[in-house]
Amino acid sequence: MKKAFATLVGRACLRSGLLGFLDRRADTLSLARNGGTGPRLRWRKTVLTILVYHRVNDERDPFFPATPVDVFAGQMAYLASRFNVCRLDDALEGLRAGRLPGRALVITFDDGYRDNYLNAFPVLARLGLPATILLATGVIGSDRVLWHDRVFAAFRETRREALEGFVPDGGRLPLGTLAERLAAQREVLRHLWRVPDDRRTAEIDRLVERLGTADRTSIPGLMLSWDEVRVMHAGGIGFGAHTVSHPVLSMVPRARAVEEIRHSKETIECVLGAPVRAFAYPVGRRGDFTDETKQFLRETGYACALSTLPGVNGSEQDPFELRRLSPWDDDLARFGARLTLDRMFG
Ligand SMILES: [Zn+2]
Image (cartoon, rainbow, N blue to C red; front, side):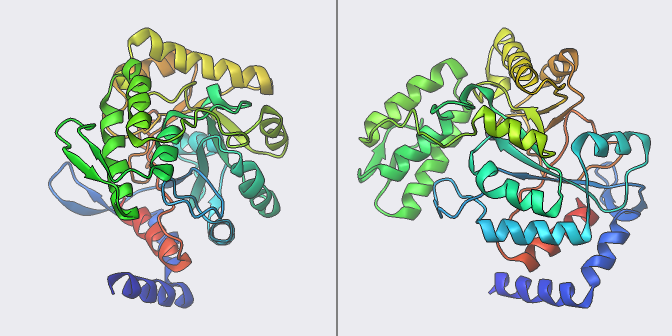
């Protein structure tokens, strides 16, 4: 009911041109939190919205939801007509120098799934939209998968009725229905994000065994090849690093974090022959990176780092803690309305 009402209001705003008007105003006037004393109206010069996508396909896989291709195409056409979609480095330079164009927006993709090339790149190329893909380099150009894909495959394929005693204090997680399997997967992921990185592989081995499925450590064609990376780079897509093996950086020893940060950058630079200045934190919530992580990134020559902390970025935003918005909704009216509201109140 609430969703239907939001759709109705979103459509009415879209048709009346109200969203376009608010998008233009959001660059100069927004509600901001005033040092914890509550919201206040203030003038601000620039607002940069950064969107984060992962997968774009029509598989309708509930265990790793993707943006359907027609929804993605609709969202990109909407952005092309209403926003100044910028290259990430141009946007950051503009933000720093106070010369950001109005309604500035950056499109990013994390991890490096092959559907970015097959399904997203043609849409971006047709509309002439720049974007940046942040690569977990250890799986690019190989059949190997990221650790979370092993977990998704196990929950997708399991026929067990329950998972017992796997998550500390988790008791018995029922797996009888799709909803139960998705709830159990969320619980297990929360546990795995907190496990020290050197124990995570063993934990996932244990999970796969308990769920009684084949261990999908390799899935041909899931991730980008380096040739596809080169083709997209020649077609105007920017590339950044997202570590080598996708660990939560705050959970790995210092030397390993430095290696993940440095090696991923060097690998992409070697393939593309161009400097890599952008980084995205795996998982990317508060606590998944530290001040020390930011320091390593600066010392390694990065200019910015993207989190998954929700919000938009003003000129005062720490470039090593950039905020991003997930493209929330398959309905275009709600997508537009929420984009506008986040720009005004984010
Ligand atoms: Zn990621």
